[in-house]
Each structure stands twice: as structure tokens, then as C-alpha cells.
Image (cartoon, rainbow, N blue to C red):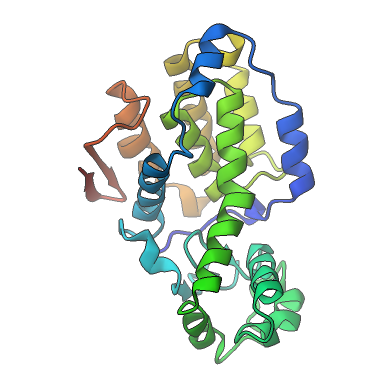
Length: 272
């Protein structure tokens, strides 16, 4: 089951750049050591991250099976699709199809670009129905479309989250907490966006890069994240924090070392 994502998840590169530019620089040997350690962008750790997010977004660890996924989940964001929940109403699906079309002109989704531009910001299917879901599935058989999904996920969500996490001196779990937050909330300017969740945390604790204790800071960040989730009824179930990320934090597993056991929305998951 796909769980809805926040409207602000349409992320502008200029806003991301501003967020990263305003972040404090690494200022301690401890933080520098963290930044040099294995991060979430290590291939094995990134695979874990993809599975963790998929457990919440798709109730499955098989994140690669989600390239073809598409449905309207009734959250006011139109169609939700693909490995990270690209939405026709929030702009990131449009960006994805534009990228795919740049790389594969004449692809099966290219004719829908005018409609995607029209419905951006709405929940409308105008110009998409009845065949868009079928054609999305057809496109998902093309490796170029899979790569485009990977690249947009990294550009808009994964890379900014990992970079900010490293800048804050956080290890793998903290970087993942940032990634999961930006996937759900985006990095816009509204109060529940990633940058403002981080801002609330900074009001309560200092990250390692500022000489703070990592566990204390991550607890503050997760508290802020739970607050943000509860601002929208669709996110009122906070188990992806409570019975997943906090489980790892309480265990002191700041590097997300396997084996991992957690629950999301009542479902149990395990990675060896």
C-alpha cells in the first residue's frame, strides 16, 4: 500500500541549494571523522535505505518492483507512481517524464507532457485518463525509464539529504532520517518541510558538527519529524519513526548495521 506524501515534496533546486548553503560547516575533528566514514551513499547502505523507505511507502522490501507502480491514492495529489512516489500534482512526476523524454525522445509517456503540465498543482487526471497508467507500466519496462527514476530520486531527495546529514556530522542513521523526512515532506518553505523540521530540532539540540551529542540531536530531530507528521491526517500514523528509526536509535545502531528488525504500519520487516 502506498502511503501519501506531502504536497511540498516538489523540491526546487534553488531552495535545496539555499538550505545547504546556510548549513553550518564541519567544525570539529569528531564531525570531520564522521564525514569521512561510510555514509548512506555507500552502495550497501543505500540499498538498505531503499528497502526501509519501500517498507513504509509500499509495504514491501522489493523497491525495484515499484518502477511500474501507479495509482491515485485519493490524497489530492493525482497519480502517485514509481520508486519514490512521484506525483502528477506536485511537479516531480512532470520533471521525471521531461528527463525521460530528453533521454528517450518519442517514448510512450512523451505525449502526456502537455497534460502533466496542465494538471500540475491539482489532483486532476485531465488528459491522462484512461491510458496513462497502462503506458506508465509500459515505460517501466524500459531501462532508460528506470534510470531516470533513479536519477531524479537522487537529485531531488537522496543526494541533498545525505549531503546535509554529512554536513551536520551525522552517521548513516541520521542521514537516513533526513532522507526519509525529505521524501515525505519535501524541502519547501512550509512549516512541515524538511528544512523546518531540521530547524525545530536545532532549536532543541546541536548536531555533532556543532559539538553536540549525536543521539540527543537525533532524538530532537525525530521529535520534530513526528510533530510535522501529525499536522496532516494522512501522516498521523508515525510508526515509520516510532517502530523503525527510533528502534535503531535506542539500540545505538547509528551506522544501520545489519541485521535490522522493525515495524511499519503494523507490518514486521527484517534485513539480514
